[in-house]
Image (tube, rainbow, N blue to C red; front, side, top):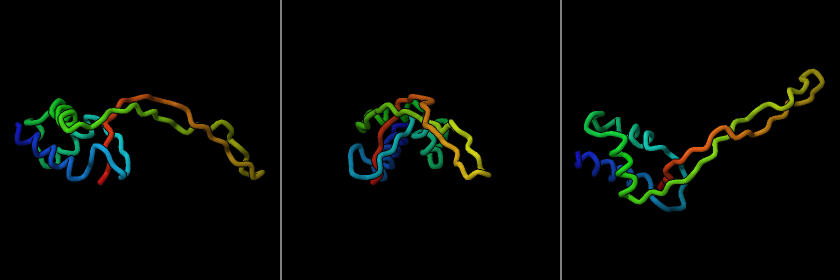
Length: 101
C-alpha cells in the first residue's frame, strides 16, 4: 500500500505543484482518488490514502464558492430584447489547491 501512495505522490508532483505560476485548480479528495484509478487497483487505496498524500505533500485547502447562472429576465426574442442572467451562490465547499506545471 505504501508503494501505491508513493506512486500517487510522484504522479501528483509530476503534473502539479503546491505553489506556482500555473493554472490554479481546485479538486476534492475524491477527485484525487479518481485520478489514480486508471493505474492503481481500487481496493489497495482509499480516499483516506488520497487525503494523507495531499497532506504529506503540503497541498493547501481553500473554500470555493460555486455559482449558477439564473435567468432573472426572459427577454423578448421577437423584439430583440435579450434575456438577463445573474450569478447566484449555490454551494460552498472546501477543496485542495493544485497548480498545473
